[in-house]
Length: 222
Ligand code: C5P
Image (cartoon, rainbow, N blue to C red; front, side, top):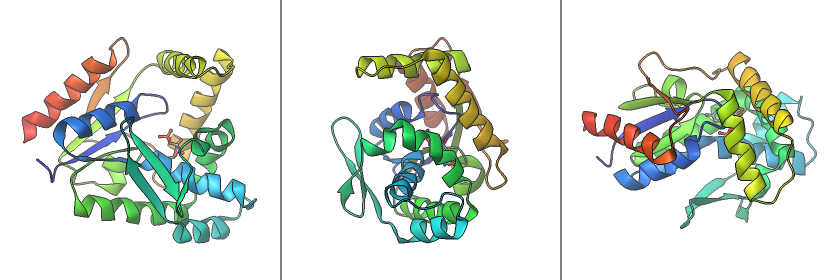
């Protein structure tokens, strides 16, 4: 079981990270949040005031940075060159720019190499957009986790409200739709369901039901 590779892809706000974390815990696998890696590169590019249309500069940056995950009781912390950037990568600024940075071929090559290196050392639940299609095309389990955009926006809205943030629901929904369009329309490794992935639509399901369904799929193949 601990060499199992679970590829968990899907659009923004589908609950992939919460589900991936808990499935990884239940199966004794390492959780890898690939979105956090693209967010980390984006955060660093913004921090260093790089020109986000400079593909060569972004590629160089992606090849230089060291991204690490440290498990915590709540999930995991993200470090870039030793600095804890767990909270910084979730800001609206990073979220609105990450699709442009992750569309750069050189950035993707650097991240995919790191992701494959992790999966070569240990069994993983890896969440992202291109895990089943590009990063781990031979993963034993491939899941495409989705939900209606209305439901995804509602969940994200509630999360932000619970954190005490001010949010506009319609704007949030628009941001999610725009990011999905950008991610699925890009030239390199667009967000796409792998042909051999199992579709899990979490609209109307609670988190425990989604996790149970995915664990059931995983247990069928081990
Ligand atoms: O999963 P999360 O919403 O944190 O991902 C942030 C962004 O990172 C996505 O909108 C997408 O642009 C990019 N991403 C990607 N490929 C992945 C994971 C994330 O392009 N495997």
